[in-house]
Length: 263
Image (tube, rainbow, N blue to C red; front, side, top):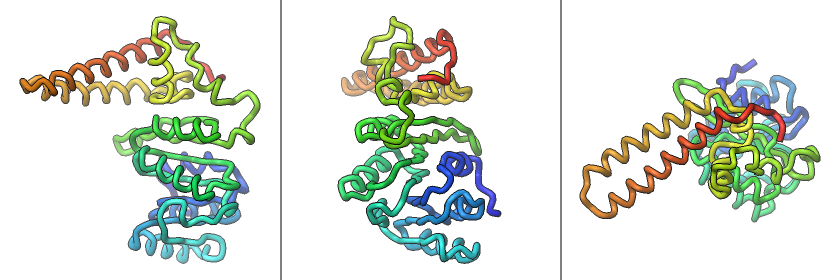
């Protein structure tokens, strides 16, 4: 059986057994091949925009002897799917803005019809993906923050609201009342989207490290802005300082909140 990276294995573990799966941006089709070889899924589609990765996916599928149950398709995003053709869609390794755009374009075209489950791994802009899910009737079931090859990744697992347990709703997930009252309500809400409702509540082990690293990047940018006398630079530096202060406030709150697996 093919061996997956830690990141792809985390995604595979989230996929519901028995689901017809479509992996969008499949590259070498490693994830679909694993899902079939492990017996977790009965069929899969490997979608890829560019010709080179599409051919690599076809080769991987053929070498695994799975051409009858995994189909490689070349196309843009969810355009490779027909409505009702997949139960689960996985998308990994791209920015959150692009991921949300792929999902929205597919939604408007009816490509998400019948899709009960989304497993998503944005490289950046995770809050954009969380907001899209919340707006369009998907509810997070869990989040994983992992580290691989010196980089940190977030894997988001969501179900349609109709398929989500009754006690797991977006209203409960994004209810910021568990955070200390000293924080402004609007700030609480925004940081639930940015840091992740599960990751915050459970005080994910890697979460402080991730955001301390972000603070470091912002500090370096502020230092560069400080060397400029332009008014725009002063304004940009002030905004970044506000961002740093907000992150520090949320991180300090994490030390005050008991970890919880409940919403």
